[in-house]
Length: 226
Image (cartoon, rainbow, N blue to C red; front, side, top):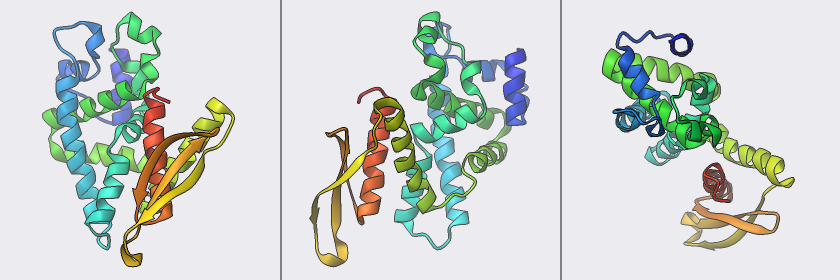
């Protein structure tokens, strides 16, 4: 319970129902009658709403397309993993010995799912307003300058840092095609690492397409598929 207290301190919230937070921290490998998958499902929907409303209120000049791109760059496995790491969530998870020995405490999928479950548990016990307050506080701590440019910049920067660490090289972005009239042109970009193409994406500008391709490559890298 001491570890749970540490997490509650980081969240600035003390659960009255300790079973709820324990369930949120329990991975299915732990072989209990419960696990965090249902709370994860709920937390995903809650976070989608919270982040959507936050962007709607804070970026009144952005149209639906820009808001959707910003939300997609925050409400995803990578985004939730960063928030989970920020509160040291990996240390608190209940995992099987096999999952722990397999690096489960640092797996993006486990961390992301557990963060969603924590927010789902917060929503159930304290309501939407408190869940929003805590989520936005963490979001702004991890992303002190939220904007379309900085969020997209993160993908390329993060991918470069990861490929340098893993492969000793940096990604290249190659224009492989474009289509559509000049006023509505779409650009297709491939991201290449050490001579191998890992992902492709399209966008309304080369910059957007590069960021989308980097995002796809990051997702594959986090899942161990590269």
